[in-house]
Length: 505
Image (cartoon, rainbow, N blue to C red; front, side):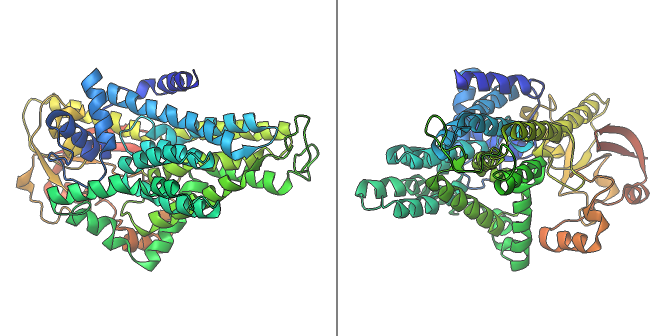
């Protein structure tokens, strides 16, 4: 009943988003990979560049499409089901990891914050594997806390099959077993090591098909070799800490949690005193020692590992630790007087919902909140405009717009248009582009660039972005207009994002 209620609530909240076409990484890899498996039985995709990701998301979507048909609505509903399960799993986690009289309210508030957090809410309907990893990682923590090692082996294996980076959790599990003296049982060691088996099997299969143990030459260069710079690692760690503890109004919760941790016992009506309630439970909300150990280990390893590898600093990679983050913070908040704790939680929930729509004053990935929906709707308008044009002009643009205009299965056009693709819209990208190579130029905002951009105010920050994260600003439009003798044909804008289509005069 809880699962059904959460699923229906999330579906209602996502109702306007369910029919939207596919977005960026969905369109670039995950949807083509799942289609290759569904239509041709290919575990390693051929219609897109293989990246070595383990195939559980593709298998899940392939089964769903076989049962209910292929459409964005079906895809997004299937992912919302996983998100609903993750919210329910976070409630189960709270029952295992928290003690105290306010336990029920802590569990409900932490689950609500997870569901309402802008990153989780946006990712709930997007075909990315991190939502699956979040579900199975949460269940793996529950299994460890309950000492159910067979269950741990199963859900941890599913986490690894969802995305290979879920293997980060295994060293924490091994240390937990050593701490609890569980490693003396040979069955425990088998369960703890078992999740490595499907990952090894996948690596062997992938190597046999592609010649690489993971990814491809370009993928490895971007996500591994280019990231191993001490300064970049430190800067990335700072960004990861910000993404987990502050971004998306998480700072409001963190501030309230710190107040509860430091001041709860000294405020009138606070629950900082370690007494006993009427039912024998401690009045002070507390994390169990086992849960605390897993929280510290999991968050530390995720932050460090994702600072060492990964060319794209995407906050969604941290989703697997979001359920435990919200549970810990709410536990601290509920050390405040009950009335103050409820007020703080209500205010924080309103801030999280507001962050669905309000973008931060610095660049961020559109997929962090409902900015991704604005991006899709804007590109739908432009695709409709081009498709209804009287001629079949050659359109010059960059991914993902190039894919949207040439791949009908993504949901933007009914037939492929004639498109020439360039890597991006920087000066270097246009260096070898001649005027004769296109009829129309399709320019759009590839990243969030607010007018009062915090990063743009500092030349040092701009230089650090360029040197360590490959940032280059888009070429000024007036430069392109003068170079190629362009005339503005159409202009589309939506909540700070824009598309401009130029024709050659």
